[in-house]
Length: 197
Image (cartoon, rainbow, N blue to C red; front, side, top):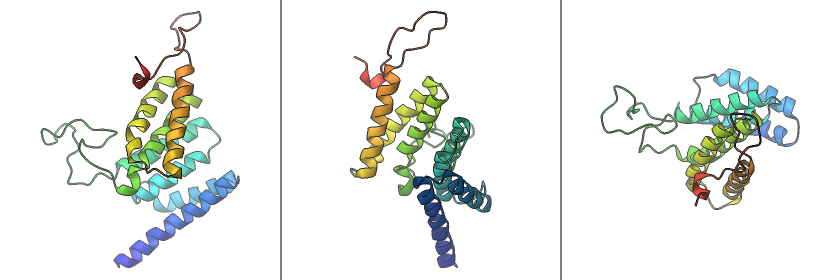
């Protein structure tokens, strides 16, 4: 029985991978259609790794930045679902001393190894979504979270690519002027906390 379930899970990831190949080849509509079909099969309560992976790529297949944000938020929510039931969730009623939650996860909890390296990319994508939607403060929050989670990345093509993308978006946001509450030009670029003197 466990072998059948494992094979079924592998089949879902294979199908997601096939849709991603279409996406990377430029067929966004067909990729969206296939990912939507898989999403309808696994649903909101499906395996968190499947939901996280699918939503992460479904966001990339969107044309509307608000839809992209919605899917990236679904991916982050699915990743946070990795918290086991027997771990206190640091909300009212939880055991004392568990600390504040981080991204909906209890302090001290470590994600599934397959998701640990996903968090920097999830937060990077959310930051990019917020930039597109002209919400720089929300972008800075997720960019800082991406930077903080980047320690889980390997020193390989994927990890180096995500770190480089984080640095590019940091430079872009640092160069944007801080909006003024009233009329007139902004005061100039605002550094990130780690760039402050």
